[in-house]
Image (cartoon, rainbow, N blue to C red; front, top):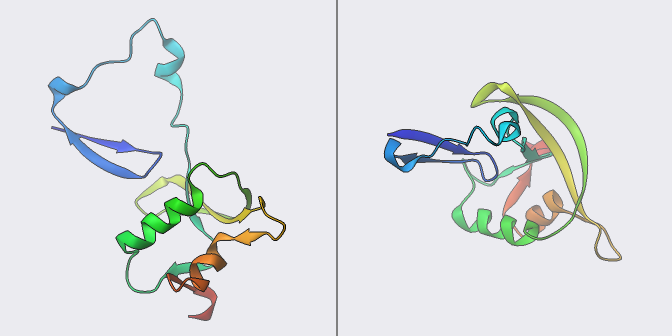
Length: 119
C-alpha cells in the first residue's frame, strides 16, 4: 500500500502499488514539476471547537468552488504537518458583488467560526 497526498484538497488516500502508473518518460516536464498547490488557511479565524465540522467544510466549499477571489497574504508560516512546506495565511475576499465579502468574517457571521484574535 502507498499513501498518496492530494495537494488540491489536502487529503490522503491509500492505494495498492498495482493501481499506480508511472508518469511516462515521454512527458519529462510532468516528472520534474513540484506540486502545483500551496497549503493555506484563513487569516484570524479558527473553528468554534477543536476542529472544523463536516458541515463547516461543505459550507466553505460552497463559498469557494468556481469562485474567483482576491487573496491577501498576511503571513507565510510552516505547515505543521510538513515543516519543509510553506503555509500561507490569507484573507480571501469575494469581490464579485458591490460589497466585498471576507470569507473569514462570513464564517464568523454564520456561526461556523470565531476570530482567533479574540481568544
